[in-house]
Length: 596
Image 1: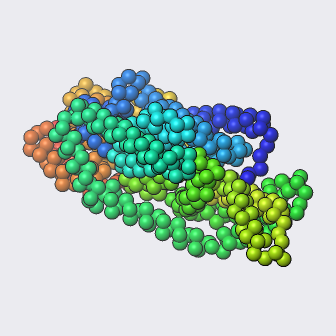
Image 2: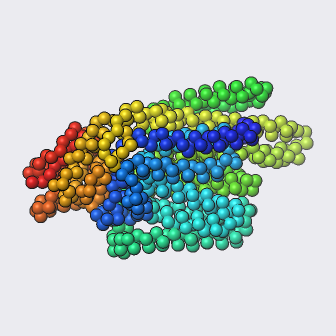
Image 3: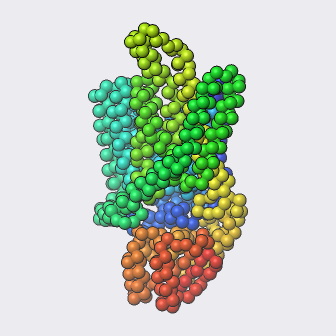
């Protein structure tokens, strides 16, 4: 087991660490204005229930809940939804800590959670379908595990209901239905009869279907059966197509990132082998050292492993570092779930839930293995919990020793020494593996995320400028973006422009929340493949014929001169010239055109 401290101090560290873990992200809430992903969420919330958008069924409940909050929230929309995202994440990780606190000492649990939380900050910290999906899945797993452990069917039923509803927060969440195997696994541990496990699984499934139909009923009631069927059909065709959200594309990315991870490990096999061999020699050496000096040696060994892991991984992409973590977590969770089946059935159940978690998290998204970032604390803590509790496996060593003794009376082994040494190996392995994890993620979690990176904006030390846009109140960004957004807000909010629809090219859907000009395509992000190039050009040409032209914004708020779809951008520029548009607002970050 990992070295522990007095229970009193362990509880103090846990409580103080929990407060720090839940509160520190608040200090980053106002940093950065993400004009694309966060803008996409907010623009969807603004118009989702107004009939101005094509109903996106794939995340309907996320948008419905977001739309309701948007209507009652104060003017500072971005700040509000970032605070809500923090609150839901804080509640989620509190639940994760409750699951693992009995299996990992606080001295080790808190740093692992901190690194996991820091990695999550590489995603847009705005309340969205990702936040809802991960939080509700973890809540559902917690309720299911609690219900099985306490033999309380009520919790199991609520868990099934949450899983069913979660499908309409994000359609790929349907894969979470494999959680139905957890009651069967718990029965397999011997804590329940197989018959009772089947009954619990059936009731879980029943409430899952109730949640599914409840979510479907809400969506049908709001949008009508025809729109829902059309939306599901469009989603089906999108998943089969060549887009980034097509099934083939999504699996190709996962396979590609896995191949990159394997090649990286093979290329650096010598370094990792050196770390492993050094750890073995270190273990043998430390087993003979007095206790006080032993802990000093542990500190130096950990620092050495952290430095070696950081040195190896300092230039790798984050997807590879995430792959390495999952490569460790998945087999360890399988091994732990099996090995703890009889001695620690609740831990076995938690590790089995992590297997399901890892099987479902990266599917249904174009983020590939990077999607594990949102789930990293759960995945990482499973690694430590699996290793930290392996000392009981000495009984298997004892059995092997007894077999040797019985078959060869001349061959005697001191079981006490073997048990102590084996426990020491496990303890050392847990410490050094934790050090490897910290080393791999040190750059991405600490240097990039906490000290440098702000999602969708610049480094934190450059985010110093406020703005006078009500919807962005309280947020700080770089001067060029603050001034550009403020100028756009003043240019677009003129009485003579209020009745025009707005077409935006340039990866900046956030502009839709800065005025009441409705989206021209019925979508807030025309750059994406949800609006095909053919539909894009056809609708603009038809608008010219009908003399019902929209305002056109060509934006570059990120100041990188890069567009998701160059062909759409080029067509927009030519369309402006060919249809006698007038430039009515200009800044180095945007050009706003009005039809004559």
